[in-house]
Length: 185
Image (cartoon, rainbow, N blue to C red):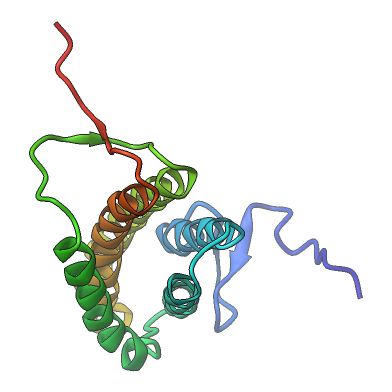
């Protein structure tokens, strides 16, 4: 069976449940951005990483897949049983990472080590995914059957914070300073 179906050749795609929508529909943009984010987590996981860090990234990928499935399903909320505890886990990871870091005294630019730079890319994609989430959530807020669970947006917000903290931690663990932003003169 070929991978191509030709059903999208006119600019539409199917949601779970078989409803057809334009490929640039807010819902498609939202779960497509989640898919992009998940793919970049996969790219990061090709780097040599500590086993515990890799396990944490695997759980992020699993959660992103669940979120994507919910966003691809009108009224989807099956992921909530996993996303709510995942938010708490991420907050614990952020707290642990921040305890190991010196407080920020300046803005930092993406960079330092390759792992830190990749985490900054993840942070920015997570922020975009969060913006897409909120656009979709606001467009569906008056339709209870189509409402998008707020917890999905919270997860994406925490994920971007986590990526920022982990980027700083990756630099610290490698003995590389964060790249400070300095005001041009």
